[in-house]
Length: 114
Image (cartoon, rainbow, N blue to C red; front, side):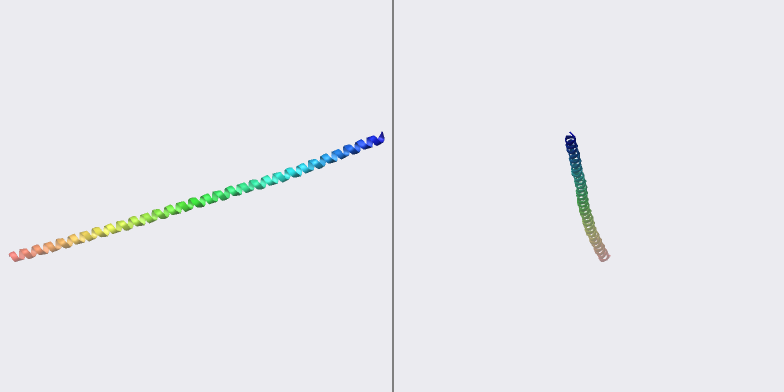
């Protein structure tokens, strides 16, 4: 009887130890899974951050290109305006020279008539 009791106690003790080992192993697996999830979470955050950075860089490049195009357009418009102004000034100068020649001719005709 005492041998049977001792055997039962040993079996019970062994079962308790096995259960404790299993619990410890499960906790280690769970902790490893938590760390892996934490790493994956960090990785996901890093990936999202780098994607956002790339998106911002792309937006900045688009804005810079738009600014350059606008500035180029403004320069082009300014140079066109300048060319038009030069043409108008040349036309005014030509008209005033023509007018001066006409006056001169009229004066010569007037003088000849006198």
